[in-house]
Image (tube, rainbow, N blue to C red; front, top):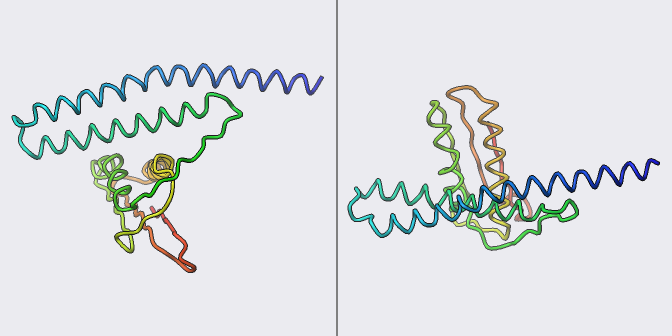
Length: 173
């Protein structure tokens, strides 16, 4: 009886994951598509905008598109409980990754008088990693730190090589 209950529970969880991933994908796919379309329109009509406004809009639309695409990939990998998302390692420059993360979570910190700082030593530090998964992990950690700190709070993300040429990424709030 116990094994039948476990099998039925697993079946229920699989159905739940299927429904959730389906609904999430139905929402994320148009967000990714619309952000690409908006970015293309911005490039086409950017001449009429002040340079800083055009740059800010480009940064925002690229961030929305990148996060939507990454979330689509993430959700797609969880369509079945038995599938663990496969990492897609690529060469990642940490300073560029940190710039993207800062563009996504930094404004919330600064809006309530806080500070979010990033440092990479050496500045050209690279690693082989799944940039979408690493970016998502950093966003989640910084969001948790944001929620755990009060107005004026600070967080710092440092990446450096430590003993044995091992990479250490440290987040302190």
